[in-house]
Image 1: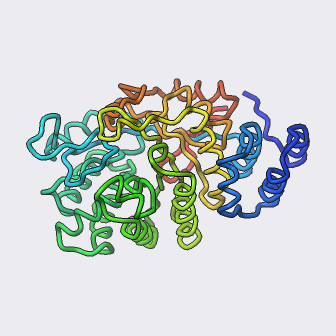
Image 2: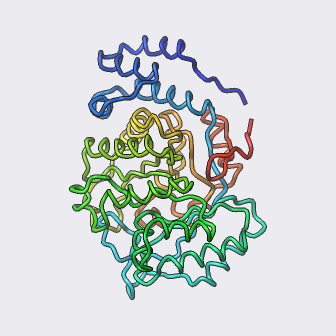
Length: 380
């Protein structure tokens, strides 16, 4: 397979043919010079930048970081429970104790799930779910230990900051001690969910979870003890472009401080079966614009992920032309969060060969990675 990585001079020649607006020329020059974009420049990209310009310059920013590589891993999800103490208006997944459609796997049931993958090539078990009212950090540490005893070589990427906040309080331990308990039990990395939009005023219209400072502090402390995390952003609901940029600015500031975020993952709001079903979903064009702006604005976060389970395989493939360099993993039909909200992928599963083919037909080089982006195999 042959791909072409475009150098700066080639990019300049392409941009010259696009007849850029003055503001686009200024932004392009900053990107080409490796300079950071301002909030107002981010806002311009959202509101006025041409689609062609966004694709060209975001692709350049991506290739400067990861060349023509597109990453994926071989993973499964475990969702231990969907019982949850919180009330998120955008959520189609959570149930209250005793409500129909809920589940709470026992630790033995989770062992049975994991045993199914004992001789498989998976390298990551991703664990998130509802915030169960009765489970504390010691319960989840036992869960991690059991999984690790069956799959000793996998990365355990587990628990959002909101899940952690509750399980630590339930056990009466602080964040630092709670993280150490889980790390000793096998925690390797953390997913970035639960942030939604890091603006407390807007957040109060969306959910009753802890605010931005809790999320940021838990990630800060995880980074301090060597736990890499990702960051997400729920977009396409009642937020404005300014809210997205406030969110990304806070991610960027924390990354300047700690360097602990490995990837940023925009997550599209899906409007089926939740109290916000009256909000129409944004277009695919808006999805691509959002990826491009994220790649350009978050200059210090190395990877940008399109979660194909959320937006579908074809749209995830399209995102590779708008700054994305990661498509998450093979999943093996082990997550229900977005299928319950109406996503196209009702039984999300991809084989390695399907993932490789999807990336290659986008004229990119597929690269299998582990959770922390060590390269395992390059598919030339």
